[in-house]
View: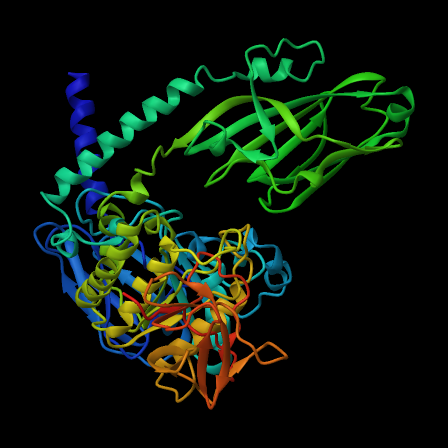
Length: 636
């Protein structure tokens, strides 16, 4: 009998919980609601109960349906605030405070949009001085679903201040900060991003129909099975994992490390037989010190460690750093050292992309009274914890439509001013993928615009920055084709692309300078969303004619004229080919606001390419407003 009563009690409790007044997860204290557009609020309560929203002196009432759902439409409101809102029903109420009416921008894409302010070295002062409370931020949790859902996982709006701003999207923050200089309304950043994601997970099943075969749900299941098979294959090379007792013993000089693998450093473990592994691993090295060295202390120079580390010498902590691209310098004093063999043990935690000690070999050494002694070469290596194994890249952030279903679909009834997007590196893995991106990208843009209650909003994006070592000879590359695919989406109305081919970093897929990217995106927004008359784009290839042994190019978006940063007037980054299709480095210069390109090696020139490489090195064609020219090719 007691069991029956308990079960009945739990069932009643469940019904009561479902019947409690709820408002959708987007609506919290400190939120920003879109100005000059009807506002929709929705949630749940008891079935067939009246829910009343009181906001800025007016009441709006609605009755819940048979499933307990309610939705209210509030007429458009001008920018302003802060305001308060009450949501009430017969037995319950919700009170929301510090609400602003302004412009909401959706920030979408992968890690170059997702990464927080605190992850970039150049943002420290901006975080400390963050005081514009008219900027707010909402991070959509990293979640996924096979089917479209109406609700997000819980999150909250945060106010721009030193306590919160470190967790804001860095690119979105600088975009908002630049907009606030020109447009005196609150700015809300609705951040729905996932690092490493391909574009297909952000697309609805309908948007994907013409590009994939079979039922979308079946494809999701197939992808996940493939991922599990790949994970098992990688796990077979990792296990068994080191337990805590083993790690504790590894601090000892006489520890038996025969079960540990070796890894050559500097280097990432993804390149040493552990592809796709995120988690915790330990690196161990024995060094031998003289009595003089032990008595004087040493300084460890460990280069960069991706992402964070804790470092010990002979079991004594000597330093820790959480910044993935910071150079580590730790001191070990005579109190932790002794003559003879000493143990360096480093705990490395990797949450995304590469893991391990990396960078220049001459940055990996220790300094003693005898000078600098290298620490390059073999280290002992042991995996302690695996948090993710992506194998060939099949994971939630690369699986068809499942991010759209949970991280975008629940947002469609939340009015916005526009969308800013930074994504593409995960689709530049092969030439076919890079080329198909132009179709996928335009499909995503059209689909989102059609489904959002704010129909046809401006869609702005950052083109892929330069990355990896500079090409020594002209080469074909998937990143070049991906950039071309991004540019192709400019055929859609109310779109703009910002080019950042000049501010990437060869050894950093997450270039630090998000301030300039945010500024350039703000120019595009001021044009497309706020209708300002200003130059918002760099030069975009328009046409070409042949004159003798040279080619003369013309451009759109020249602004007040073309310019180069070269003091002698020469342009860099151009290649040219004849009928043989073999591209050669070319000379180029500006003539009467056009660009002439030629090469002594090409007698009968046919085609030109500009900045056509994953990293074209220094490229220096700009308009006089300081915006860089878009990479292009004239051949198909």
